[in-house]
Image (cartoon, rainbow, N blue to C red):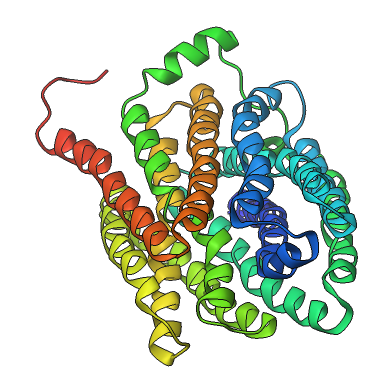
Length: 404
């Protein structure tokens, strides 16, 4: 009984610290509400902003598998802590930016920090929690961390209105630096935050990970979903849509965008726990189908209204959980020795392509002079992303061969 209480306390501590670290990433993503001001100050076009912002996400995608491999040789708490410190440096760099190249470089640094959060945080929690409860743990990891998406936009918009967007970033940079140092110290001695488990060689685990059941279709699904849901193009361009099509002030953009992100807190937590019962893929398919319709309809709004705000709130609830649900599914089908590699592949390919989609959306908006075709393309990608998930479900229901 005493051991069970100690284990539960340890699990809560690890979940709290991993989630706090993840929240710093989403506080950092609140910078998106400053993009209208940054575009004006640095005299950027939509395509230039898309490239400057997405380069960090592309680098983050490329490095995520490397971070999973690095965790075999260095404690995960140290990797996670330094990731947060790099966020701090990136925010300072963004605040000091005077042109496209400065912003580009600051986002490169942020990309390295971003590469750490998902593969390392999910790896820690997947080792710490049982298969029956990992969906709820990951739902909390994402849902509570998405509070950063609420706090960040409102706080940054209010600060920027009062003291300017540059000074608001200088103040904001303090938080991730402090959290990073705290993580390195506080999780010392926690086995799940140490080095990842190595069963045989890295090469053997890489080859076996690719052959894990469902890996290829799930990564295909994430690669498509990332183009129109989750934390990619949808989060980058929605504040710009609110500022330039709906004509909201910076403070109102931050408030309305935060309401959407509030849905992003509720969705992963509630749906994540429910999916432990009905199945992760089934929940992801339902969310994605509805999210596709919501994304498609969003640019039909031309003025701010309670209906538009409710629309964004529902999009937050249903458009953000799919990533955590797909991760939960992979963590249950992969062995412990394969899990860090499988998740690294998932993040590297999925998030790398998410950044590419963000650049594409910027060019679409630039070429057509409208948000409508970009959101329609996002909706199409989300709809297309449900097909690999449906394929996996059909394979489960009507198996054609026996998996070992």
